Image 1 (cartoon, rainbow, N blue to C red):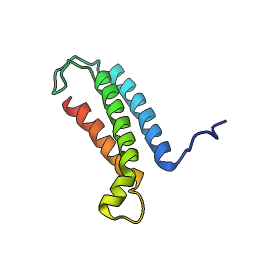
Image 2 (cartoon, one colour; image 1 turned 30 degrees about the horizontal axis):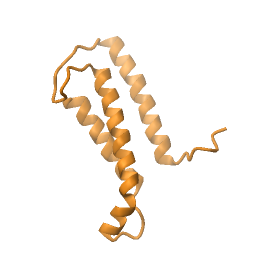
Image 3 (cartoon, rainbow, N blue to C red; image 1 turned 90 degrees about the vertical axis):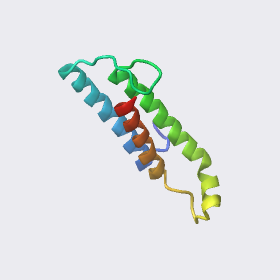
Length: 102
């Protein structure tokens, strides 16, 4: 059924983290309803808004990394393309930054 998709460990970890974040945000929202706030994003947002924007940004960071991995290998003189774990860490950092400061 899922033969068309390459379920590597980083992909599985990424989607597991998204699922855990959604469950965590649901519990957090039930325990403590959110309020609108203005951070450095140009709009007032709730926690859910920031999570959605952060997940989109994380996906774009991963896609950009995959797109430039070959160039990074050439520029840095690496034997192989950089690990996808690098983009995972970068994307989770972007997500954390948006959740905290956005």
